[in-house]
Amino acid sequence: MKYNEEVIEEVVAQVIKEVMKQRGVEQTTQSKKEDYSDAKVATKGTDPKEVVIGVGPGFQTKIHRTINGLDLQQVIDEVKAGIEEEGMHPRVVKILKTSDVCFMGLEAAKLSGSGIGIGIQSKGTTVIHQKDLYPLSNLELFPQAPLMTLETYRKVGKNSAKYVKGERVTPITVENDPMTRPKYQVKAALMHIKETECLDEKIPYIEWNA
Image (cartoon, rainbow, N blue to C red; front, side):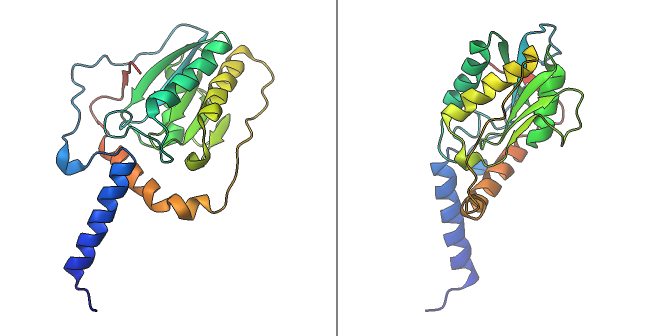
């Protein structure tokens, strides 16, 4: 049986639609870009015990679950809980100027009263950053989002708080599966595209009540 290009394109479109639906990603044709004109622009904190969590531009608006299906509210709750367990204060900011996790984390660190920040892409990739480091340098990076668990996110919060306190920090041990990239490559690309579509050139970052 021969298939023409139109049939193939339709099948691909349906597969992409289903994958994005399962991952909690809204379709571009079904929703407009968020309007943040009335949102409170985030400013640099003054609390030396503060850790800013910088989330991606599509976080909880266009994307609601990580690449492996974790609810983003649970993710943020675990990170905040880890920070609070170490006696520090979390603040969540939505980073609208970039969809790159390292730049996201660096922006969060610059806004943080302590100079320590966390960047979380909506698909789950995470980084702990420090305000005076280069974007691609960081304190800890968790690049394999499909292997992240809620327990890991809580540990991320705890470690970020320990960096604030100047304590000796043991890097978080995470699983490493070489098959993760090929298995999730298409889903990761789709989610990153959706995240990037949510960028707002007018507003760099806003306070986010997550």
